Amino acid sequence: MNTKNRVPDENVRSGILGEVETVGVLPVPDRERTMSYKKMTIVWLMASASATTPLIGALLFHFGVTDMILAIVASWAIGMVPAGLFSEMGREVPLTGLVVARKSYGVLGSFVFSVLFTLVNMGWFGLNTEVAGETLNAITHTSGNFWFWLIGVVQVVLVLFGMKWLEYFYRYTSVALLVCYGILADLLFSRYHVLMPAATAPMQWGTAITTVVTFSILAWTYKVSTVSRFAIPASQSKRRTAFFLAPSVGIMVSVLVMGLIGMYSQQATGNWNLALLGSHAPVWGVIAAVGVALAIIHTNAMNLYPSTVDLLVAINTFRAPRRWQQPLATIGLGIAGTVLAILGILNHVMGFLDIIGDVIIPFTFIMLVDWVWVQKKKTPASAFFEKPDTARGWWNWPAIIAFVIGLLISVDGGVWFPRLFTVVLPTPVVGGVVSALIYALWAIPLTRRSRSA
Image 1 (cartoon, rainbow, N blue to C red):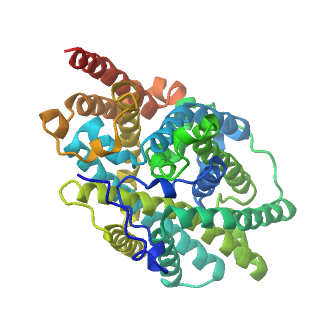
Image 2 (spheres, rainbow, N blue to C red; image 1 turned 90 degrees about the vertical axis):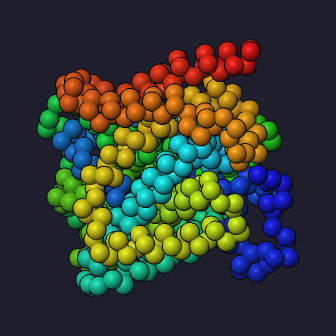
């Protein structure tokens, strides 16, 4: 595929329509790669600060505040390197992760994962929209679908204008979000009897870390390059460490703060959702409504945007990219996710969405081994769009077999060794590490032999 003529004519890209993002899965033009590490940190800080993130405080409530903090720090230490490597991947070759996966898993392997992750991201989009609609109905003492559609439409419009305008939105609404939740936190501490939550059960590190990493950093990791492809290229910046750390710091600071909010709210009110305090007074209700709406929009935009890009990777496996594929995909997926939220269908597929956490981690770890030690970060962007001339180009069986083994450990490891994976080790992380080691021991020697032949 020729990617040199991908940049649309400037005369066509004028006015409001000219601001709609149409780059799709093609390499991001250098003129659009301007995001700094500070802006990237804010993007991930706000994307992670969902209205549902305080749920972590309720899920880990019985372990107490001290051990929850330690579990979050340990989760950051586990996810820091994978997130950092994906951040660098996007800066080295300005492509989304599932395009790079064409070399890791083969073109058809990448296609399968693209379809799967499209459905998963649309599912989380619908689920979060449902949570937002129900919470805003409770705060405003209303019923019906108004809030569902309002939140859905705002998210679709934001994603239509792409990463450039999403970054603006995150940056300029971050203060409003912090103020809203700060006021609600003050309301909590001033009107309720708040005590430091103490442990009521022995700490289970495997369970706690699994909860955190699958709820946050490792669930986001494969999406990091979808953002970092708009960052300053690696060859043009000396702030490599800052860009490396930006995604994980942004994600986990939000998890820490929102987790604490959720835990203290659970202790004082019996409910982790701090925003529901706004239902008791009109003024607080407005503040809570604004905070919830911003929190959901921040996170859900980063569900719909990757869902769009993942769908385009699947479509463009068999059909050449077209200018308006990206906005049309965004509108279609946004409408479908909002309808599912209204129908409440996603309440019945939570088990499926939970299992996907087991899929994403081995998928991610194998990709990193392939990118760093097999491709050695040297594959040019154009190579990811070439039609494979070997069977390995369509299906990379070492990666797929290693992935299946890692997935089996992630899903059933707790059944095989219940105490080990409950008390000590996070099962999905172990599955991911094992799959990465298998692939490394299999693929790296094969690559060396083929290069020396």
